[in-house]
Length: 73
Image 1 (cartoon, one colour):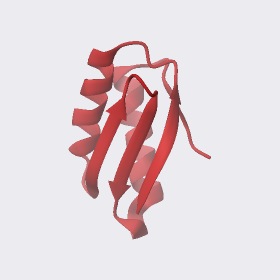
Image 2 (cartoon, rainbow, N blue to C red):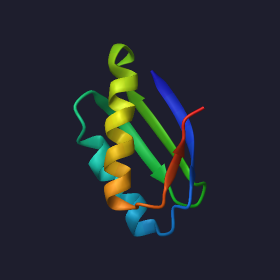
Image 3 (tube, rainbow, N blue to C red):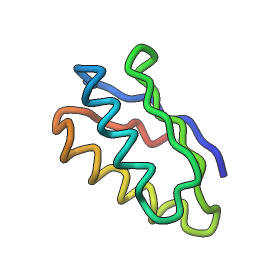
């Protein structure tokens, strides 16, 4: 499954790169990109574990950029 999510309060390109690297290391993630310019996360991950993977993504992102929110709609 591939989905796109908007990000809010992502303050620097370096943090976006760190988030992208950390997300790509999560088991079950096939590909992920974090765009600082677009304030967007694009992620492709296993369908059957997608919600579980997204919970881990949120935790990883909070560690890198505590103010950043992933709009999970």
